[in-house]
Image 1: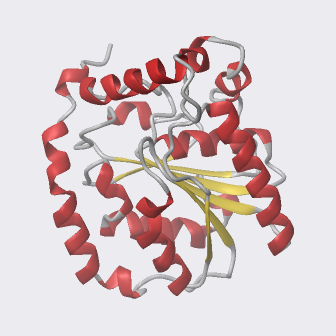
Image 2: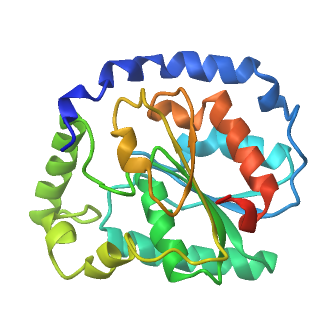
Length: 247
């Protein structure tokens, strides 16, 4: 049983320091990383975040030789089933445009969605990189964040459009998503899960999907989108090729 009160949420205050460190770090200038092969990379933001939260990573990926693609999310709070339908359609468009499978980098809830997409469409997904994603237990989060999740669910249950509701957790609308979230992993799709024991939002143990290659960093949760060590892992993972990701 995870003691959610022991998740060190106070550590999230260091995100500004992580951002500043990234700006000065050689990896941000593309030093010490292999040039990309022009492959498409779909970036999926986390809960309460939008595409802009991964904008720095998108610009960096473009500079080192990849083709970043946005998820088309202003804020990631919609019903999981609806969001996945839109992301799957986006995957199809990207795959058709580039003539190859797509890599997905997802932060937090975005990584959990990436796992489901890979299970559903291994023909479209080359591999995924999850950043602080609670893929084992999506509610293994700090009580403060759990309260925010509950607030969104209440509003969604009252009929406000564009928000997930309690039905997404218990009802039929997201039943298949819940099944796919723990389904057997496709053999030819890469899977890397990045986690931090000092994550102040998500309990790090919930990131340890047995199907994934686990990589530990010292980072805040929010800061995984601007942490130099995370950027290095993303570049290293993309350069491995999908079949080597889980080794």
